[in-house]
Length: 160
Image (tube, rainbow, N blue to C red; front, side):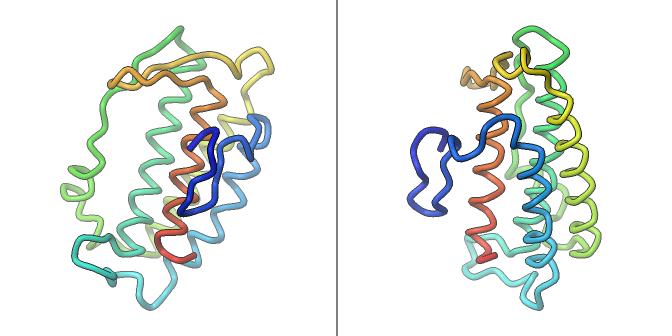
């Protein structure tokens, strides 16, 4: 949801301008720490829906993947991002068995790294482009906005 407001979580990419991305990334970490500290952190509301722990581990990895994508966009002209199968990663890395405190710390570290990289973006770099493996094109700004929607939407998913 870049231009339109998400009907589920209420986020719209246009809510956050490029230069605000780093601060917004930092601002979301306490909400994830709270979600990962809940007593029901391992409980799935439905067998087909992830637990707060699984969502937290996913969001940690989303921070890491987008940090790499941003790095590519800042260092290369028009890079194509490697594919990432998030569902396979969840199974292979056993998101459901990870330690919630460790996931919270790793998520905070990944958020700090990504926010720091967004802070390095110069005014003339916000329109640099990159491509997902499916051909979807992003600018540095829209990559950050797309990323934020994922993080905010998953906070909504876990009720945080």
